[in-house]
Length: 327
Length: 295
Image 1 (tube, rainbow over the protein chains, first blue to last red):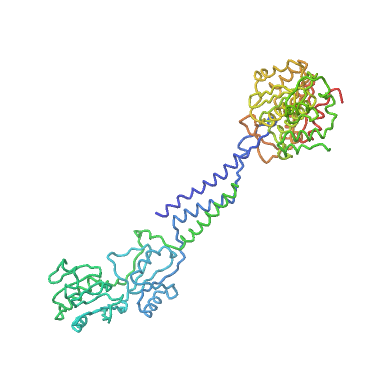
Image 2: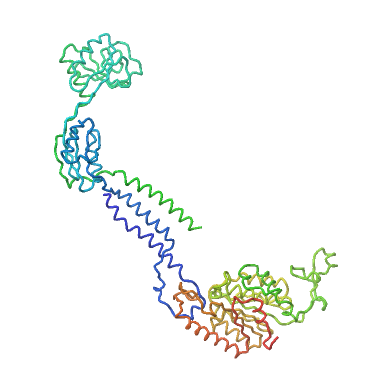
């Protein structure tokens, strides 16, 4: 789509035509005794000459620059590239790069979720003979990605990051609540804060009094509905009642804290599913062949900024020159 | 005072100033026949106008009436001077060497000088400006007011269009009843033309017709730039080129044309002066006004 702008290049002929025509119109001078001369052919007087060649040049450049800016050209200057996701084992990545013959290649470190997006946006910047290797843990997407060039992916499960969830417990039965959180398995672990802070994502409110208005968290576990008036009209799911308040989402169950391991795990799973989110699958090692169906990638930076600056500079220059000419 | 050069015409738009300078450069010999009005028989009082001599003001009357009056004397001069200015488009031809000078401004100065001389001599004088297909007529009269009127008309004249046709011109020649002197300034490029026919007819009616043919030095030398093309100001279509190869042809055509004009003038005993506008206006004026028989 962008490339169609190049067909607008003949617009550059317009200033050329204007600057040439004016010359012809001004050329003939009056001479009272012209009757003593023989008639000349008018075409002989049409000398191909420009008025204001500098202004003409600037105008042509301005138009060409504008079209180039609209066409958003990409200059393929990037060589072999290795993309390593964050958290990947550095020794393993170096080994894989050397194995693929890309030990000297440029290395870019990106979060795993952004690696394929980066490839998609920047694939036109690579030289045609350059190779692209993605190393590490890339989350799988709903559909298989398609690229305009060959991309090789070597997967290696990243060491799980230390995922912490800050929890504040306001309860007389704090020990029972803490016991519930020990049932949590997986990479996450729970840190119980002494006082609620900005990082606190879960608050256990096991008191009849209402919490202070400044306290906020994405989820509250409540055992007494008196503390939250919103619970009076809340929807219910079995024994659970839930409501969205200005302080965050509130879950209420009179039977809490859970008495056994099963109900504790069920509650933690629900919390995990609805508030922390599921963990993605890892995309397996594979080679994406170059595909013709790859959509034109979204506009990418570099040259576009330079062209924009050139465009502004040329515009200022053109206006100044035109002004000087009029005076 | 040295003769005023034609560059003065290019540099000022004040016609009366240029005329004063040109006439001052000529001295007094040019208008020897001037009659002094003061001593001659009194005829009437007239209101003072700028340009009148102070010594002709009647001071006693001024003391009585608190206004200036000039004693007007009876004049004997019956000769009317007619100034004919060709203001067709070709008169806009500029001098290629003196910036800002063209044939029309030069002709304007010459005719203005003649008018000033006629006013000093006490002759009646009138003006006929031919241009844009029309003839603008200023009736003949005497005095400083008339001089101002004529100079204003001369300054107003702009080169444009063609000469009026024969019938229009003929209708403007009704002045030719009394003996008169006709001073015509033109570039004479249209010849024969309604103007040439009118001048010859006036000459045949025994009027004193003097023609000033204006040229530029570039025309005389055939020295135009060949870098550009040219158009004829009185013809719309056609483009002309000038070059070294066309120089001889141009000169030949031009000389043949003016030889024909001069021959016809001589045959009708009509003095014709061809002058370049780069020449000093005072000198040209002296030669134009000189009597055909000699000084």
